[in-house]
Image (cartoon, rainbow, N blue to C red; front, side, top):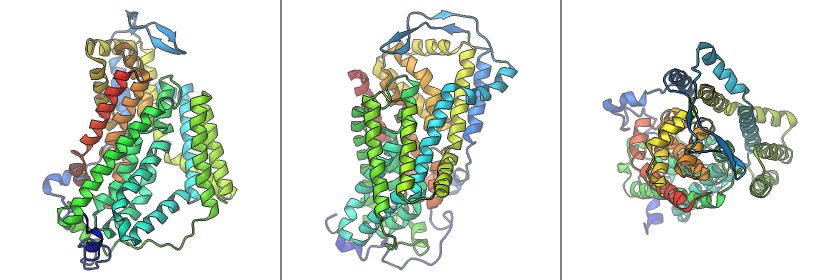
Length: 505
């Protein structure tokens, strides 16, 4: 819009226009799009992911009595163990009894590789919690938000700039739960700029999710999945950098096109009446009292330097998960010292970070227990053989797209990225070997299938927490976002096809 700034002062949704009705209203009664038809959706409470994983464990235990045993020969190729596609043969199965079922979760927690992954996730989460405790991330974003709120001429850049920032954080360190703390800042800021609460949620949430789906070096998804697939950690980052650009561009397009429409006609927003009623409740004045200290600037420098070292170590020094975990521990300690945190404060922050990923850790162990159970029962290779036969003769591109669909469906049940990697990559990677898809492409398929639907699935605690913080009914969010997700899937489908055709490795 050429005259956005001129219109801003009298815009019906502007934070400077205090004509809103006094007092907040309930979404269902204030014009929010909750209807009788969608009322049950807004109250829908999905089963906890742990319950779903345990149900899957019981399901696969039952399958061990139905699926016959089978085995492939494994051979070493280019430094990793792969399946010999012509070596499948029948073996005696060993169905899981009650004792094996009961012991399976324990085996998942005590499995050496599960311990390695869990340790890595704990340390990375703890290190990032220390960085957040210094206030460097939050304050940096708040300072930028203040700038956009005070200068109308910068309004057109608000959405693309912040989506890029949040997308980078999703891509680099898998920002997910951390988005929640930004919702109380960005919803009132979006209202002040003449948008609606959906835009206020979309900028940090869809931005971070786009970066998560197109992650370049996310240790929780890319790092874990590559370790499970037995390929060099963070290898193939150049292709993922291009992918990240397009997922981020898709996010900017989706949010910006909607925001322009709402700015011109706020009544088109599905949250219009509710947003007007709560404008007085929300503070659109962001304080600039807190200074951005030299300590916080140095903490950000330590973080950026650490990421550069991580990329160099993983790509040039053959670092594995243990070295990456050690680096994040160093980053956390340096951030605590430079940020001026006392030993006790830093330790508590580290433990709090570990608490934040506790549910993900449980899911990782339980997911591992499923794999161990069906491996001991000798049916994993039978499943691989059946899947490879089902798509035998298909073009590898079509096979890869089917794998994307499978990962997408699984994400509804296992929304944890690292947990889903532990569950699916040990099966998908050798399946890729059998149908002519590189393991790097399998990881790419996993991260896209896992990342895109994280924005909408009701089984994701982060999604429901974000919407709850913004007081947006899930049914409203889902109906607004569902069709727009197709842009991300278009990017995913094209990227996967290119990866298969070019032998991405």
